[in-house]
View 1: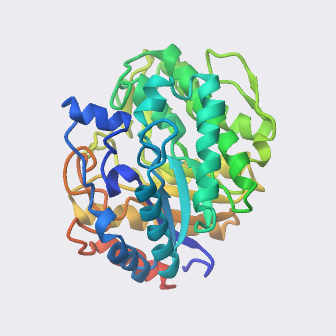
View 2: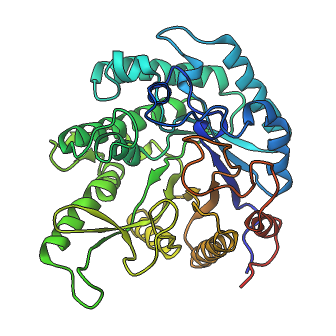
Length: 411
């Protein structure tokens, strides 16, 4: 089996991985306070970008989701950093010359501290409609001539979950379901608003929604899930997946616990329905989230490496949006076992190939992220890169390169 010549092989490069958290970002403030290890300089991409972009191009990558870090571009309210803008334009130009189509990502976790704290972030409607809209317009004008397309927000629901449910990212809320619901609603609205603005520049726009297969937890492998677990799993799936799909299909956003919100033109906001897949979840009757499948060992990040979940979310999307182009904007695995990483990629490639053969409109697959960070919070538990911090290709990188160059998919 081989993939079509026009298949989009690519990678996602978050700013925290490439450069570390910007000092003026909300995540940078956490690092100064000692709540997280220092992540700068990430994987050194800021200085090694020319070599890194060439490395990706040589290994078959044609597309790149690159975060245009708001906190570096506008470190203080209303003040744009001319050096940061010039540097980013240089990076984008080198990427284009290397044959890479860059999709500019406007938000991928960290936010400027002045926006997140002083102006109350996306949950404040005035801030979202003014400061966020102003930033979207600026980025479109400053970099629109150098990008191939746009990804307004990467993994909006995961951002809301980390900030208000598990407390792993700013503002560090834990089990604050009311704030989580309000933040999830706000980030969905911000994503659509940005997409509609960016489409006006004539570049394609892709969503990048975190899709998670959700299953009711079992007390033991031989027993059926409880009714409470079934009900709670349905709530979680409604929150993380179905509410987002309904916004796109019906142009109405209904986050559980919130009143319905009409979202005009949501159906036309995205040229490509992009999504990331990391892992699946099992949900207990009390709402606790567990790794899934429950019978398999967890990895370095506390989750189960389960490639079959990619097939689950692909079929869910194809059934819900049969006429839309689909794109895997983020696929990865946190592990120090290189054989396991290669197997995970091989399984994912087989799933993607089968989807294409079955007639699904799957346009591409992007690995997240290609080059390891050196240290700190950006490195995380386990390694996600196809290349180590010294840029040596791992077996999975060589596998992907062969398939991207038109070689057959290995069994």
